[in-house]
Image 1 (cartoon, rainbow, N blue to C red):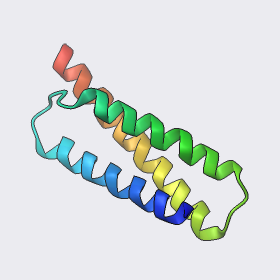
Image 2 (image 1 turned 180 degrees about the vertical axis):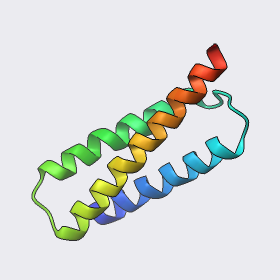
Image 3 (image 1 turned 120 degrees about the horizontal axis):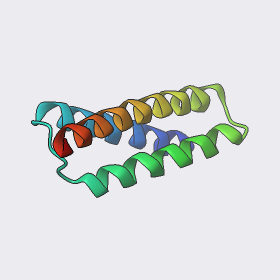
Length: 83
């Protein structure tokens, strides 16, 4: 079950990152992106704290890395849009 959830988080973040990079720097769907980032980040941290298999730990670390990249891209596009 955790593997499926983490895989969905990874896919959603990759799609959101690709959509953000393919469009001009705007803040379209800003609240949806923020909710996705923090929900994924919190659950990934929670999954790290729970003892699980090696595959789940690798997926969790990959998910956290993608969330941090997505967070940086969102912060950059927000900064460029506002200033």
